[in-house]
Image 1 (cartoon, helix red, strand yellow):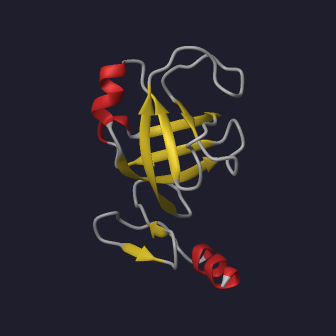
Image 2 (cartoon, rainbow, N blue to C red):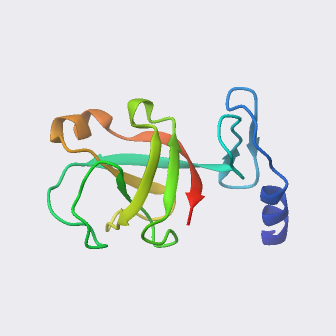
Length: 128
């Protein structure tokens, strides 16, 4: 099964989000035209607005996210489907509830983070 999933992921190019949705076992894999990519995966995104430092030691700021340990600190991830929060983020934090297909975006305003809520987004690894 792992071999099939790996071969299926390597065979996916970039496509249009609206035109192409391919499911390869689990998780769902989406293709994009607008950016160089191998594939994007479906994640659940939440937001946090706590001041201080991240697990990597950096001060919290826009552009940082908390992600599962499989993403090393410093990994750049492109997020699609988060509306005005789409863009490239750097993994700089962890969290007790951040496991598997879940990320947590830093948003400076608590009210804004609450409005963000919980969204389904698509993630591509830009640089690791």
